[in-house]
Image (cartoon, rainbow, N blue to C red; front, side, top):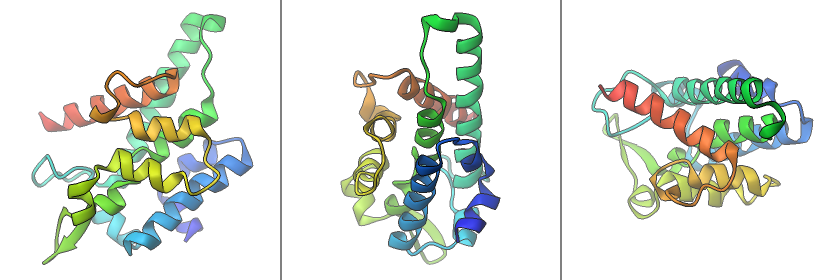
Length: 177
């Protein structure tokens, strides 16, 4: 399965720290296992249930948020240089994992993706960060996962978390229109 995940999301390879890359892939793999999702399911899973009939799946959304995050970081570093510090690997891991909790927030009933009981109780930023914390994921990455959505209002403490939050909302709002 890791090879299939890598082919679906080649952005994993952008993480230069081998240990962080492997743990980021492992979190996805274990989340798929827990949610009983196949790679094919992910290609059908909508990135949100808030946009009825969205043709954008969770993989395409995750990749777009990740690439937007990297480009934002590149511009900030280019324009502000030493005035700003961004860990590219932390940013990448956080962006790739930001919606991993949706693998527990959703279930399939009668062929449709709907909110699961777990999803009714815990939204994906919380379930995703809690799940990822079982692995050797750095606190800075857990922070990005937990703070990337409305749950993180007023709580974002790192530049990487701010970047992923805004990249995520730019993608969501653009598709909502």
